[in-house]
Image (tube, rainbow, N blue to C red):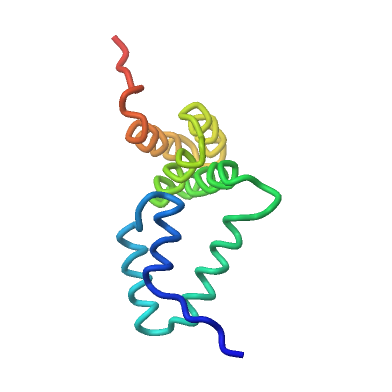
Length: 130
C-alpha cells in the first residue's frame, strides 16, 4: 500500500495553525525537502507533529516547555514557541515564569532573550521604570 503524499501547503499549514505563519527558515527547509526527498520530509514533519501533540499534555503546556528548552539553548526558535504558547492561551506571566526556569540553566542570556520575546508579544504591557 502506497503512503499518501503530503503537499508543501499541508506542511506550511501545520506551522500556520500552530504559530500563525511559516517561519522563513522553515519555509526554505520545507521547499528544499519537497524537491529532494519528500518522504524524508514527511517522516520528520509527522514526527514533529506527533511530539508536539501528545495526548498526555495540553498544547499550552507543550509550547511553554518548548519555549523553555529553546530559551535554555538561546535559540531564535524560542520566539516561535512563545507565540504558539500565547496562541494556545499562555499569559505573559506564564512565559515570564518559564523564562525564569530557563535562566536557571542558561543564565541571563536566556532571561534577556525572553524579555525581548515577551516584550514583542505583549508590547502594550511593557513599561519603563522611572
